[in-house]
Length: 188
Image 1: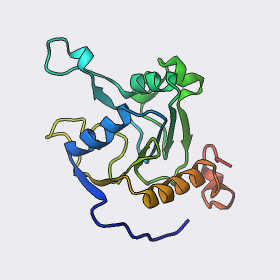
Image 2: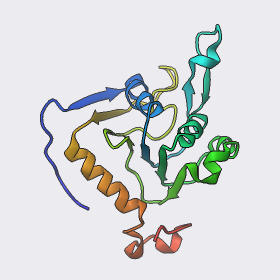
Image 3: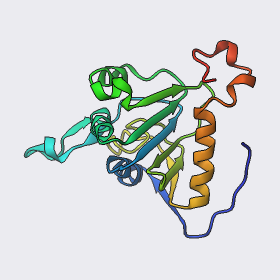
Image 4: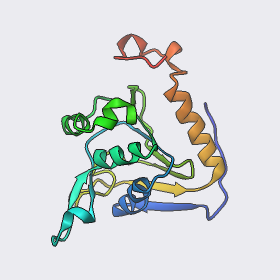
């Protein structure tokens, strides 16, 4: 799946810092049909929740609680990741019954290094940010990583990235992968 594609001028938004949270995470929270995520590093992500704030400036909850709600509404949730999720991610995941029962599909491939979030097949994020609070702008300004990405609704880019994601998700490269002998769970 090697390619180079042109994009129409003006169809991209550049995001950095807190812009990742405002544009990408906020879109994910409103998903109606699907959320596909690819990341090298999978950690727990805390998201702002106005219901929890109750007089405080801000309240937070695990994004996995949000995924649980989305899953119960029938939203397809997928995460393709390179390494074992953090302990905090696993602990929060284990408390979400709907996710445990298949509401969130997780697949691991040690060669995954791309970072993308696709919401409802209509919004695409491509960038440097892993699925972490520091990467996606959820941490304070002095604790965030320096990340850069693009957000687009460009159909050609969406089609290409979704095709690549599906190719990896289905384990198409696994049969010929040189790392297969060392892979914990080949996808094929």
